[in-house]
Length: 397
Image 1 (cartoon, one colour):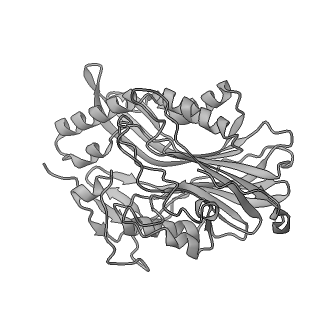
Image 2 (tube, one colour):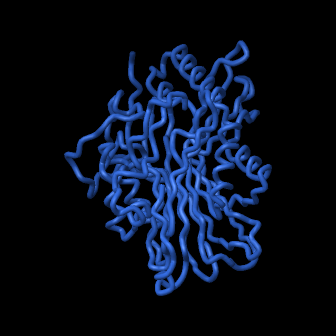
Image 3 (cartoon, helix red, strand yellow):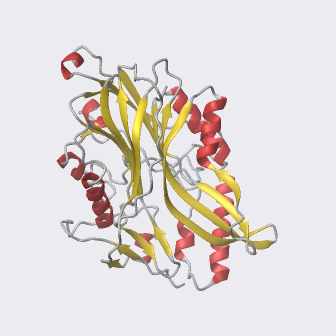
């Protein structure tokens, strides 16, 4: 079988060499990446402006992050010969069926329940997908099959949660043929990141300066005409007079460690480069102990960020695992083996009080979990560091 040719748009400057790689779900190790230097302009997306009126009234902030997950093995689509349309359609159809079988409405409802259970004030989301279908004869007339963000916000509202979508970043968008209802159609899969802000507090949270952006360094599938974009979104918040940047990001997998490293450098030199204190959350695809073969994690410490798990659990650096369920969310024997979903912070006016890894079972048959990742929930006290000395710290997971 002919493997799809890959390139990575990668600036090689200041990237460590000679570091090993380890296998994971990504197709990249199986087909072999072709590293190439290619110039590409920065592609920012306009931020969605908006602010909840009033001033923040909480002395603490509950932060929640989760990778919502597509619910299928979509790597198979990228392994086939793009010139063999039968192979392409077979692969896309199987992946499409797996997405449907993963029951996105059920999974987003479970994610909503977890968010409300943790009493989250702000929520960061990665891999919050939308799936649409169109007839071949009318490719622009799209019918939405699943909109994960819409499913999630509806489920939050149904459970009494009040959240405003503060910013959405649109990343990779891929359209491929799929066999449905006895004929070939087009399926369009779009990846997003988002930040939600709770809107029902007596003294509401304020935010402004919503921003989004893509990483210049990313994977390109030239034969398929596809750019696999990753990026970030952010808002600047004002909570009880404490102003800081809340930043959510998703880096490439450890299968292309130099590319991941370059994206982290872009993140730190871009939206994280601010005089404001920063809360940074995301699926960074880099394990602090290098259990996945990545070497990006130390960059965050070098940039002044503290890792909430390590601060609260100094005697358990190997704990807090957040990734490893099987692609179909069906096999309880597959255990988590790394910690790649992180909540980081920089600035003396943050004091983490707790961090909880959220990974509830949601059924007895697949899907057993809402994602192949666990969620991460953390409480931060905000304000003058001298006032934190009597604040209780909870060492838990």
